[in-house]
Length: 108
Image 1 (tube, helix red, strand yellow):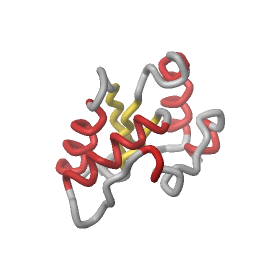
Image 2: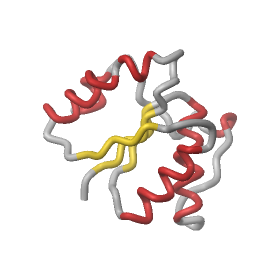
Image 3: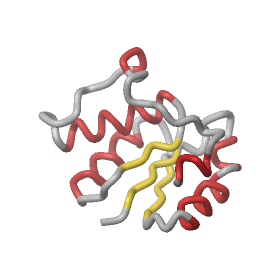
């Protein structure tokens, strides 16, 4: 199945939205099949991630900062409570290793 990319367009004071085309082009160039979903407000990432997990998307990629990534992790937790630990911002560091400035590196 395709990957699901959940993008918080406000991340980095709207810089994530400005780099959306660059990121999607890098994923396509790397041959990654994906669907893109943009969050529309607080907590929306939780709903999108839960829906994506239940629909079988894999992997589910968070494109945003700590808050967006925390929401995605919590959505995954809702879909599979025994498989993903609940997460707060203070517990997030162990999950995030990719820097948004390295779009090409993420795709490859």
